[in-house]
Amino acid sequence: MDNNTSLIGRIERGEDISAEELSRLISSHTAEDLDYICGKANAVRKRIYGDDIYVRGLIEFTNYCRNDCLYCGIRRSNKNADRYRLTREQILDCCETGYVLGFRTFVLQGGEDGFYSDDDICRIVSEIKEKYPDCAVTLSIGEKSRESYRAYYNAGADRYLLRHETADNAHYAKLHPNELSLENRKRCLYDLKDIGYQTGSGFMVGSPYQTADTLAEDMLFLKELDPHMVGIGPFIPHHDTPFAAEKAGTLELTLFMVALTRLMLPHALIPATTALGTVAFDGRERGILAGANVVMPNLSPRDVRKKYLLYDNKICTGDEAAECRSCLERRMNGIGCRIAVTRGDYKQ
Ligand code: 5AD
Ligand code: FES
Image (tube, rainbow, N blue to C red; front, side, top):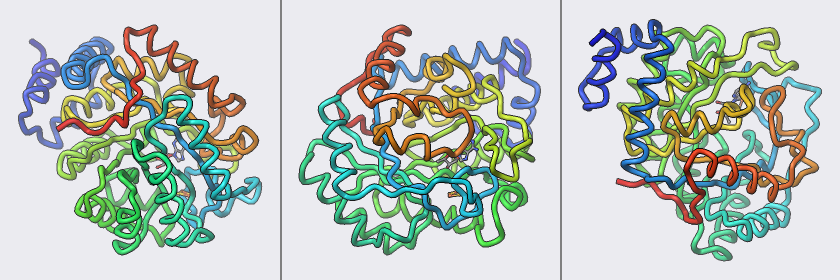
C-alpha cells in the first residue's frame, strides 16, 4: 500500500494525523488518490445518512455589507454592486414558496447589514418559526456579539453558518481588511456552539495565498471545533474585487477537501455548494459522490438573484425556485440519491 492510501486509511479510522502528514497528503495526492478518498467518503456518507440528501432553501435577503473581504463581490468598496434588501413580507413569501416545494429548512443569508436590528432579525425568525413550526431556521449573517447570537437563538433560530475562511492567521490577514481577525471569527464560532446552535464553519479552496499547509490547518481547526456543518467551495474571482485576476480553485482539490472532511468529521452536514456547481456542470453531483449530503438551492426572488454575486458566473441566477428544486431532484436521482422532505438535522 502506498503512503497516501495508508494515510487515508488512518484518517478513516479516526486516528490523529499531524499537520505535516495532512499537508503532504493534500499536496501530493494523485488522481487515483482522489478516486480512492471519494469512494471512502461516499461510503461513510451512505452509512450515516443513507441515500437522503437534505435541502435548504437559501434566502439571500440583503447584499449590503459593512465588511470589505477582498474576495467577496458584495464587499462595501464595490461601488458597482446594485444593493437591495428584502422586507419581512418578502422573506415570508419566500418561505411560503419554499414550504410548498418541500423545504423544511430556511437559510437567511446576507451581508453584515446594520439596517436590520437584532429585534428585526428576532422578529423575522420567530414569525417563520410560528408559521412553520416543523421547519428549521438557519442564520448566516456574520460576526455578532454573543448577546446577539443568544437573542436570535431565543427567538427560535436553530442553526448558524459562519465559515472560518482560513485557520491560518497570516493567510486570514491577506484575505481580509485589518479590522477583521481570525481570533474574533473563532470567538463567534465557539459562542455559537456554546449557545446551542447547530453550527457551521468552512472555507474556500484555492483562495489567493492558500497553501497545502494552510489547508492542513483548516482541517485541524475543524477537528478541534467539531462543527455540525462544513461548507467548502472553490474560490471564484469576482471582477470588481482586488482578486479579479486571481485563479479560481479547482474542482479536484475542492472534492479532495470535501472527502477529507467527510472522513475526519463523519457525521457532519456538508453541502455540495453552488460554487462547486459553478466550476463544473456536474460539480454538485460530484460533491455528493465525494461525501457531501446537502444541497442549498436558491429561494430568493428572481429579480434580486443577479445582485447577490459573491463571485462571477454564479449558476441559477435566472431560475425560479421551483426550477432549481426540480433540477436538483433530477440531478440527485441521477446519482442514486433522493431529496428528503425533512428538517435534515445533524445525526449524532
Ligand atoms: N468565491 C467563492 N466563495 C466566496 N465566498 C465569498 N466570496 C467568494 C468567492 N469570490 C464564500 C465565503 C463566504 C460564503 C458565504 O461565500 O466563504 O463565507
Ligand atoms: Fe461581506 Fe465579505 S464582504 S462578508
